Length: 145
Image (cartoon, rainbow, N blue to C red):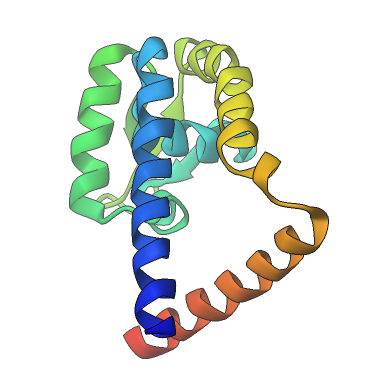
């Protein structure tokens, strides 16, 4: 019963949280997937990343990322360029319009994360959760190998 309760509460809370965060970004015409891609690009040197690396750090499959990038290109937030040294590879590059989009959305997103997640945790809860999910992520990654 305790295992089932822990698992079910995780599933319910995580789905509700992600749905709410996604809904909160809708006013900026962004999805959580768009926001994560833009956030990763905003932190990258020259706001540029190889598509394969971006898929990995944004935890999106390559095919899903390719679809998201097409949508984001139409919105003018990113552009793709072929890698000069690897003709099969591509870079995703954040445009000035993409930078403006994430700068506009970030304060609302941070407020949403704080109100919906962080404010219900004290510092010890945050530390424990970080340790727990680091162990879970490591286990999942080890099993995938």
